[in-house]
Image 1 (tube, rainbow, N blue to C red):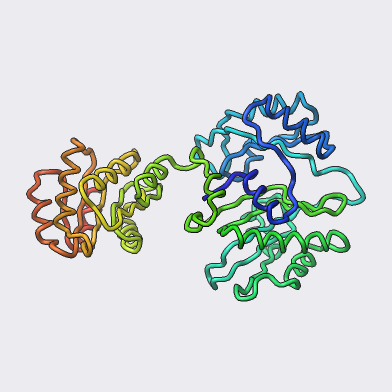
Image 2 (image 1 turned 60 degrees about the vertical axis):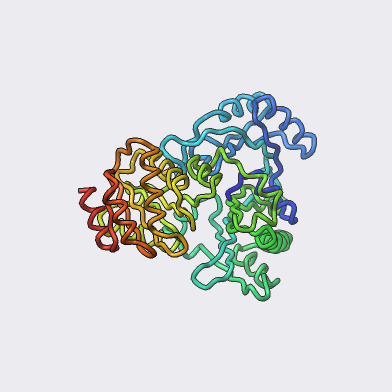
Length: 396
């Protein structure tokens, strides 16, 4: 589950991570009220107006602006709220901005120059350990840094048995070139950030930039946070932060009816039971010259109602040119699945794309007969290769 910047900062702050303070607003007038309150609390005269959408690169799309007075706060907030923000991480249509974060200006003059760093905490899947990734090149896309100056990216891997050790936090500060008060502040920041990552059951914390202010404070100016969905039962307060407006509407609909659905960019819809079979089915489609349009796991039941719901979800994608149903009948009998497919097809009326059905397992032969004698535009298959050949033929 992805969070907005302001929500991620709330979590960080609850674990002692110093943040750039801000207040959320949904209208221009609320933005002015928020700016006034921030001025009272922090003394800041300038404010940063930040679009709150689940996408990076907001500044490049015009979603982050600096306001030097209350008139500009009202004007810029009014421009950003309601806009379709297009960034390198959104679709061509962009994402509608429903709210903005009015944040304090933290780039104030002082005894030293502000410095920006990149930092993230995530799982290194290669060795099963958590990892802190960081760089002196804050404010830039980490992909660009990795491509152009890979020597400026550092990693600190953490033994899960002992957690982050003090010398590791100090090494992060040292590699970032810090000393004195800034060094101490960074070690505290790293330790608190890692605690937040572990205690919140996050799958990603990305702070870009981490800022060393002109008076040597270290704060999170941004926050990209993803929480592990499987751990939300332990964090009901985090679950309440979910913004369904930011999520794929088809995936939201599927989740509401208990289906595991992930939208992809291809032209062949998939309906399977079991995640492993789903991955194999997507490989099958690729080998046949197609591209999977979705991942859809119907689970252990595939009655007519569930199959019909799955078909409707798949067909919401206008790019789908064919549907491959690949069900292994272990717990569920293949003949019952076949009957469900036939009933669902009839209930839906005309389906304008061909359907290939591969049913293997208990009563697979009976299931094939049901499909073949249904009179519907449904092509049956038993072997994997047979299904692949039919997908290839229908796409050519």
